[in-house]
Length: 279
Image (cartoon, rainbow, N blue to C red; front, side, top):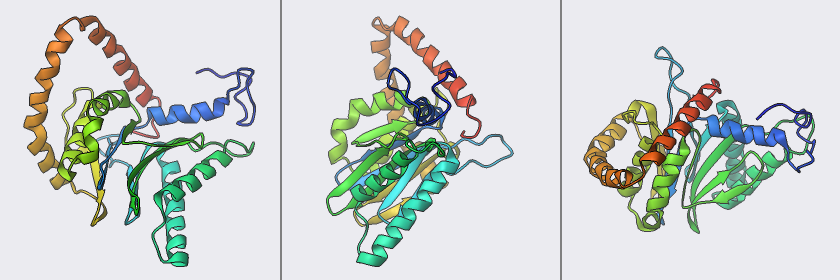
């Protein structure tokens, strides 16, 4: 994307019917660290990659608890994600205080989308540069929503956002038919494998990923690093068994495609470096 005469204001339309400032905000989501969400009938699992800027610093938090029945994973500008998380907490507290019942997940998603849409229609505001994967559990079951900076929202069985998320999406698309009846352990396993797909061959460790779980009789909580590392070690053999099965397909005439696939990965790494505020 390059600067042009139609991107100086979020309310200025281009002749092609585009709002460039909104598109730039959506691009910030693509350059953020990967976030992944999966759901079954009874559980929702959120995972994210959280690398530190340097070996001397700690990583930024990417998964936030909103309420006992709602959690959110973000990709993009972490500061914007914190503000929206605080807003969602306030909405949940106000609803619980007024009606003495948990806020329905769908209603919170709509309120969040309306808040994001206002920023695309006011010249003195800018769109939120963050995408949110919101997982929740209410009377109608488990839900997983994606809220876009444009104000749109979508419900998914499984989804991935952020840098190099396409690799995770490819894995999730192959497996999504099994997610509805998956157990808690199976969802965590698939989330870890999908997270590994976004690392470009880098070894998956508990220090660079975060896993959270929400389910029936299980309030939203983030797993500690020791538990995540034990799960990674447990599923490592299974992942190694699945790895060689994909190699014959690649050798059967997909060599050129594999070489071309290396180019987007390199560009993805460059895109991630272009957004130092979110790594």
